[in-house]
Amino acid sequence: MRTGLFRTALLMGLVGSLLSVGCATSRGVVAAPKVESVNPESGPAVKLVRVTDARKFEVAPPQPSTPSLKNGEINDAAITSRAIARKRNTYGKALGDILLQEGDTVAELTSDALKKGLRGGGLRVLEEGDAGYAEATPLEAEIEKLWMWFSPGFWAIHLEFDSLVHVKGAIAPFDDGESFKGYMRVGAQASTEKQWMKTLQQGLDDLQANVARALRGEPTPPVQEPPTTP
Image 1 (cartoon, rainbow, N blue to C red):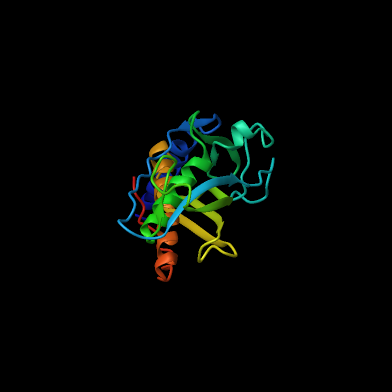
Image 2: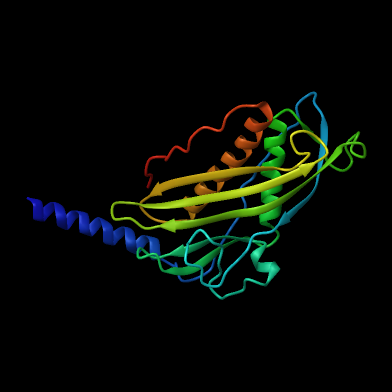
Protein backbone atom coordinates (compact mmCIF):
# COMPACT_ATOMS: atom_id res chain seq x y z
CA MET A 1 0.00 0.00 0.00
CA ARG A 2 2.78 2.38 0.96
CA THR A 3 4.65 1.51 -2.23
CA GLY A 4 1.59 2.40 -4.28
CA LEU A 5 1.20 5.73 -2.51
CA PHE A 6 4.88 6.48 -3.01
CA ARG A 7 4.64 5.71 -6.74
CA THR A 8 1.57 7.92 -7.05
CA ALA A 9 3.33 10.76 -5.25
CA LEU A 10 6.42 10.31 -7.40
CA LEU A 11 4.35 10.34 -10.57
CA MET A 12 2.60 13.53 -9.49
CA GLY A 13 5.92 15.15 -8.76
CA LEU A 14 7.31 14.16 -12.16
CA VAL A 15 4.21 15.41 -13.95
CA GLY A 16 4.45 18.70 -12.10
CA SER A 17 8.10 18.94 -13.06
CA LEU A 18 7.37 18.37 -16.72
CA LEU A 19 4.56 20.88 -16.73
CA SER A 20 6.66 23.52 -15.04
CA VAL A 21 9.56 23.05 -17.43
CA GLY A 22 7.48 23.12 -20.63
CA CYS A 23 9.04 25.90 -22.76
CA ALA A 24 10.91 26.94 -19.62
CA THR A 25 14.20 27.46 -21.45
CA SER A 26 12.72 30.08 -23.78
CA ARG A 27 11.68 33.68 -23.12
CA GLY A 28 8.04 34.16 -22.20
CA VAL A 29 6.10 37.33 -23.02
CA VAL A 30 2.88 38.27 -21.20
CA ALA A 31 0.42 41.14 -21.32
CA ALA A 32 0.42 43.56 -18.41
CA PRO A 33 -2.65 43.23 -16.18
CA LYS A 34 -5.04 46.17 -16.21
CA VAL A 35 -5.01 48.25 -13.03
CA GLU A 36 -7.81 50.82 -13.08
CA SER A 37 -8.99 53.24 -10.40
CA VAL A 38 -11.09 56.38 -9.92
CA ASN A 39 -10.46 59.44 -7.79
CA PRO A 40 -12.36 60.07 -4.56
CA GLU A 41 -14.79 62.99 -4.71
CA SER A 42 -12.59 65.08 -2.42
CA GLY A 43 -9.10 65.05 -0.93
CA PRO A 44 -5.65 66.57 -1.48
CA ALA A 45 -4.61 66.69 -5.15
CA VAL A 46 -1.34 65.07 -6.22
CA LYS A 47 0.27 64.11 -9.51
CA LEU A 48 2.68 61.23 -10.06
CA VAL A 49 5.27 62.90 -12.26
CA ARG A 50 7.98 60.24 -12.37
CA VAL A 51 8.37 56.52 -11.68
CA THR A 52 11.96 55.33 -11.97
CA ASP A 53 12.89 51.67 -12.41
CA ALA A 54 15.97 51.39 -10.15
CA ARG A 55 16.09 47.59 -9.91
CA LYS A 56 19.52 45.96 -9.92
CA PHE A 57 19.97 42.97 -12.26
CA GLU A 58 22.71 40.36 -11.96
CA VAL A 59 23.93 37.79 -14.48
CA ALA A 60 23.94 34.79 -12.14
CA PRO A 61 22.70 35.78 -8.68
CA PRO A 62 22.82 33.24 -5.82
CA GLN A 63 19.20 33.99 -4.89
CA PRO A 64 16.24 33.59 -7.27
CA SER A 65 14.67 36.73 -5.81
CA THR A 66 17.39 38.84 -7.47
CA PRO A 67 16.46 39.97 -10.99
CA SER A 68 18.40 38.22 -13.77
CA LEU A 69 18.08 37.46 -17.47
CA LYS A 70 18.82 34.29 -19.39
CA ASN A 71 21.01 35.92 -22.03
CA GLY A 72 22.73 38.30 -19.62
CA GLU A 73 21.03 41.39 -21.09
CA ILE A 74 21.15 43.14 -17.74
CA ASN A 75 22.42 46.43 -19.19
CA ASP A 76 19.81 46.66 -21.95
CA ALA A 77 17.12 48.99 -20.59
CA ALA A 78 14.77 48.00 -23.42
CA ILE A 79 14.75 44.49 -21.93
CA THR A 80 15.13 45.13 -18.18
CA SER A 81 12.29 47.69 -18.25
CA ARG A 82 9.92 44.84 -19.24
CA ALA A 83 11.44 41.98 -17.21
CA ILE A 84 9.29 40.62 -14.39
CA ALA A 85 10.38 37.03 -13.64
CA ARG A 86 12.83 34.18 -14.21
CA LYS A 87 11.76 30.59 -14.83
CA ARG A 88 13.50 27.73 -13.02
CA ASN A 89 13.31 23.95 -13.05
CA THR A 90 12.36 21.81 -10.06
CA TYR A 91 15.97 21.83 -8.87
CA GLY A 92 16.03 25.64 -8.81
CA LYS A 93 18.26 26.05 -11.89
CA ALA A 94 17.63 29.32 -13.71
CA LEU A 95 16.15 28.93 -17.20
CA GLY A 96 14.19 31.34 -19.40
CA ASP A 97 12.86 34.71 -18.33
CA ILE A 98 9.49 36.45 -18.58
CA LEU A 99 8.94 39.92 -20.03
CA LEU A 100 5.95 42.16 -20.42
CA GLN A 101 4.92 42.57 -24.04
CA GLU A 102 6.46 45.39 -26.06
CA GLY A 103 4.86 48.71 -25.20
CA ASP A 104 4.40 47.76 -21.52
CA THR A 105 6.94 48.49 -18.79
CA VAL A 106 7.34 47.70 -15.11
CA ALA A 107 7.41 51.45 -14.40
CA GLU A 108 4.00 51.96 -16.01
CA LEU A 109 2.58 48.90 -14.27
CA THR A 110 3.84 50.19 -10.91
CA SER A 111 2.55 53.68 -11.64
CA ASP A 112 -0.97 52.34 -12.16
CA ALA A 113 -0.81 50.32 -8.93
CA LEU A 114 0.47 53.34 -6.98
CA LYS A 115 -2.28 55.58 -8.35
CA LYS A 116 -4.90 53.06 -7.26
CA GLY A 117 -3.36 52.87 -3.79
CA LEU A 118 -3.07 56.65 -3.44
CA ARG A 119 -6.68 57.09 -4.49
CA GLY A 120 -7.77 54.34 -2.13
CA GLY A 121 -6.01 56.25 0.65
CA GLY A 122 -7.97 59.44 0.01
CA LEU A 123 -5.73 61.36 -2.41
CA ARG A 124 -6.89 62.65 -5.78
CA VAL A 125 -4.31 61.67 -8.38
CA LEU A 126 -4.66 64.07 -11.29
CA GLU A 127 -3.56 63.47 -14.87
CA GLU A 128 -2.39 66.02 -17.45
CA GLY A 129 -5.44 67.84 -18.73
CA ASP A 130 -7.36 67.51 -15.45
CA ALA A 131 -8.51 70.72 -13.77
CA GLY A 132 -6.02 71.68 -11.06
CA TYR A 133 -3.20 69.54 -12.45
CA ALA A 134 -0.67 72.39 -12.48
CA GLU A 135 -1.27 73.10 -8.78
CA ALA A 136 -1.31 69.47 -7.63
CA THR A 137 1.55 68.31 -5.39
CA PRO A 138 4.09 66.35 -7.46
CA LEU A 139 5.13 62.89 -6.30
CA GLU A 140 8.05 60.80 -7.51
CA ALA A 141 8.49 57.05 -7.06
CA GLU A 142 11.46 54.72 -7.34
CA ILE A 143 11.10 50.98 -7.85
CA GLU A 144 13.71 49.35 -5.64
CA LYS A 145 12.33 45.85 -6.12
CA LEU A 146 9.70 44.12 -8.24
CA TRP A 147 10.32 40.53 -9.21
CA MET A 148 8.76 37.07 -9.37
CA TRP A 149 10.44 33.72 -9.04
CA PHE A 150 9.79 30.00 -8.86
CA SER A 151 10.24 27.96 -5.66
CA PRO A 152 10.31 24.18 -6.32
CA GLY A 153 8.53 21.63 -4.14
CA PHE A 154 7.54 17.96 -4.22
CA TRP A 155 3.75 18.17 -3.85
CA ALA A 156 3.41 21.67 -5.28
CA ILE A 157 5.47 24.61 -6.42
CA HIS A 158 5.18 28.25 -5.40
CA LEU A 159 5.44 31.43 -7.41
CA GLU A 160 6.51 34.44 -5.38
CA PHE A 161 6.17 38.17 -6.00
CA ASP A 162 8.09 40.77 -4.03
CA SER A 163 8.16 44.53 -4.54
CA LEU A 164 9.41 47.62 -2.73
CA VAL A 165 8.58 51.11 -3.98
CA HIS A 166 9.78 54.41 -2.48
CA VAL A 167 7.54 57.49 -2.86
CA LYS A 168 8.55 61.09 -2.10
CA GLY A 169 6.77 64.45 -2.33
CA ALA A 170 5.95 67.63 -0.41
CA ILE A 171 2.89 66.20 1.30
CA ALA A 172 2.47 63.91 4.32
CA PRO A 173 3.48 61.13 4.68
CA PHE A 174 5.89 61.51 1.76
CA ASP A 175 7.88 64.54 2.97
CA ASP A 176 10.90 62.42 3.90
CA GLY A 177 9.98 59.54 1.63
CA GLU A 178 7.88 56.47 2.34
CA SER A 179 8.45 52.88 1.21
CA PHE A 180 5.68 50.42 0.38
CA LYS A 181 5.97 46.67 0.02
CA GLY A 182 3.89 44.22 -1.97
CA TYR A 183 4.26 40.47 -1.53
CA MET A 184 2.42 37.38 -2.72
CA ARG A 185 3.15 33.64 -2.64
CA VAL A 186 0.91 31.49 -4.81
CA GLY A 187 0.82 27.70 -4.66
CA ALA A 188 0.31 25.81 -7.91
CA GLN A 189 0.88 22.45 -9.60
CA ALA A 190 2.76 24.04 -12.51
CA SER A 191 4.28 27.41 -13.42
CA THR A 192 1.96 28.14 -16.33
CA GLU A 193 1.46 31.55 -17.89
CA LYS A 194 -1.88 31.71 -16.10
CA GLN A 195 -0.19 31.22 -12.72
CA TRP A 196 2.51 33.82 -13.44
CA MET A 197 -0.19 36.33 -14.38
CA LYS A 198 -2.20 35.47 -11.28
CA THR A 199 0.83 35.98 -9.07
CA LEU A 200 1.66 39.31 -10.73
CA GLN A 201 -1.92 40.56 -10.38
CA GLN A 202 -2.21 39.55 -6.73
CA GLY A 203 1.21 41.00 -5.94
CA LEU A 204 0.24 44.36 -7.45
CA ASP A 205 -3.07 44.20 -5.57
CA ASP A 206 -1.14 43.76 -2.33
CA LEU A 207 1.14 46.70 -3.15
CA GLN A 208 -1.69 49.10 -3.85
CA ALA A 209 -3.67 47.88 -0.82
CA ASN A 210 -0.68 48.53 1.44
CA VAL A 211 -0.34 52.07 0.05
CA ALA A 212 -4.02 52.74 0.75
CA ARG A 213 -3.80 51.27 4.26
CA ALA A 214 -0.77 53.37 5.13
CA LEU A 215 -2.51 56.56 4.03
CA ARG A 216 -5.58 55.63 6.06
CA GLY A 217 -3.42 54.87 9.11
CA GLU A 218 -4.30 51.17 9.09
CA PRO A 219 -1.79 48.39 9.91
CA THR A 220 -0.51 46.07 7.21
CA PRO A 221 -1.91 42.55 7.79
CA PRO A 222 0.43 39.54 8.01
CA VAL A 223 1.15 37.64 4.81
CA GLN A 224 -1.38 34.90 4.13
CA GLU A 225 -0.38 32.05 1.81
CA PRO A 226 -3.20 31.19 -0.62
CA PRO A 227 -4.08 27.52 -1.14
CA THR A 228 -2.57 25.60 -4.04
CA THR A 229 -4.55 25.96 -7.26
CA PRO A 230 -4.32 24.07 -10.55
